[in-house]
Image 1 (tube, rainbow, N blue to C red):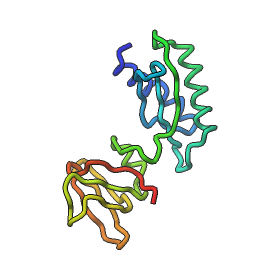
Image 2: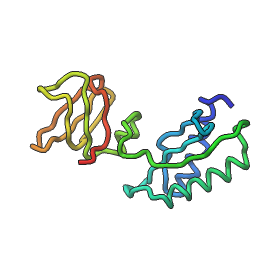
Image 3: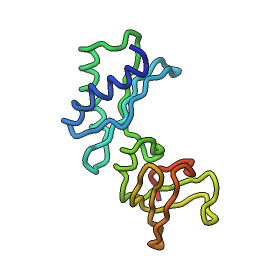
Amino acid sequence: MENKNLLQWCSNHFGKMLKSLGYEIVEVEYQPESMGNVLRFYIDNISDELVTVEDCEKASSVISDELDRTDPISESYYLEVSTPGIEREFRYPKDYRRNLDKKVVVSLYMPLNGKKEWLGILKDFNEDNIHIETKKNKEICIEREKISSIKLSLF
């Protein structure tokens, strides 16, 4: 199966299965690495709870059993299931949606109001802009094309 088709198949095929367990697929990757090919699933809880090691093990077991049954990959590979992690940049609308009302750090290509990095609560987003609320309860609108990265903030 071609890589792009495999990723789409995995998202579709395992999405419903994992949803019934309370998880959603954030992203699927298949790539060569030093140890060999790796099929990697990033999952998140549908609820706002953090994903635990036990959650990853549970999802991995279900995925592994189904991969053994359907055998969609002809070459050898390693299966890995993990969380997207706090350092993962937002890539898709669902990343923004999942992180509404959470603290984010936004890095810009060029300064906005003298700053290239903004910290605040993600209040809203659309195709063109995001809105964050800063510490001073001031709402800032940032054009998405000016954003070099946006991710959850540790602080």
